[in-house]
Length: 330
Ligand code: B12
Ligand code: SF4
Ligand code: SF4
Image 1 (spheres, helix red, strand yellow):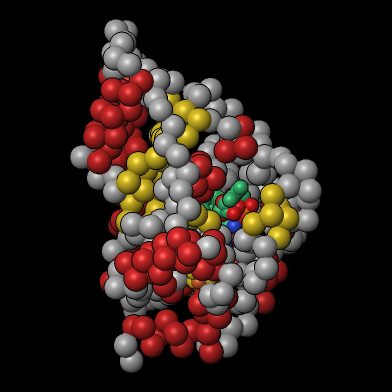
Image 2: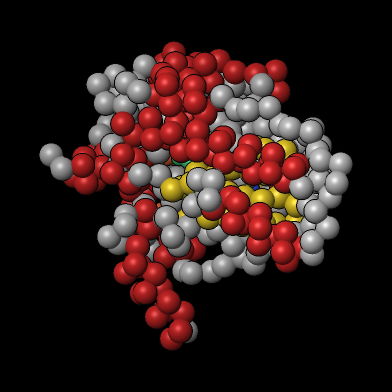
């Protein structure tokens, strides 16, 4: 069977959560995420935070164990967690104007593994509740997945190609964000790196959207016009004077209203068909309680981002042209 057929066939694959996995979902994650709340607030520390900050520590262990059983995944994730030390901030500041510093910063990032770069003014909403970030800017770096590898998800003990690509892109994010933070420090400004795989202080999708890297898709992940949803993010916060990059609209949100590829393909049916009000904003939402048992058992999953038509290199240019035409006509 072709991989496309395999991905398409996933919607018909019956999935019943393992009772032992379900038993570890001790409380619903949707109220923690603020579903139905009309007031704007910061996100609560959630999955991939230290286990004493949320109720899913045991599920995190299951998720980590199932991915590490897949061939190649343990090595890929080990590289993602292996980061250098941050160097001291140089005493002498590079006093160039913000435009020049922003341009040098971008050139450095793009020549150190990042595939795209955005800059957003720091907003407290980008920082998880209970964490503090002092720097006024967040740089978001994007790393394209290898589509041929990503489309191999879900992974298992016999085929670890998809989850290994997840680990490999996290590893690129780690190398690139630390290299950039250290370059900024060498210019006399403070900087910290937030590459994942752990959540850490910074919620990455909202600043990625604000800085023009893409739009939010129905599957809850960013869709980039260059790479689709098969893209991983890393953050660098800094007090280096920079210039914010503008948000973009290229039709992804509109396209989602009539597409059901991810909702149909998601084995536990976690992707909500209608937008929800979440922490005061109406937007697409993925039901955590449905997603997480499958995610934990199926080695990182990622079916939703792999099946998204924007992720397919052959489909993306046509989609961009169609949506641009529709926008021009409306
Ligand atoms: C915790 C976490 C998870 C958890 C819980 C996610 C959830 N939605 O509940 C689990 C383990 C289930 C998960 C799964 C996946 N994740 Co995840 N996850 C994270 C992590 C570490 C924190 C996000 C979080 O706390 N979400 C919980 C609350 C805040 O979610 P939420 O309110 O529904 O908001 C989501 C979006 O709507 C958006 N968002 C938040 N606030 C706002 C506000 C506005 C105005 C808008 C427009 C959007 C927006 O960001 C949230 C992303 O989860 C981030 C990295 C990071 N530091 O940000 C990666 C991250 C979001 N995951 C990522 C990915 C790719 C996945 C998976 C496809 C798995 C995979 N193979 O990697 C699946 C997708 C399924 C899903 N449910 O989203 C990528 C997304 C890249 C992209 N293209 O956008 C990130 C950024 C990791 C990275 N470094 O690249 N994830
Ligand atoms: S990661 Fe979650 S939302 Fe995406 S397809 Fe898998 S189970 Fe569904
Ligand atoms: S698969 Fe379709 S509905 Fe889902 S995020 Fe992609 S374009 Fe939107």
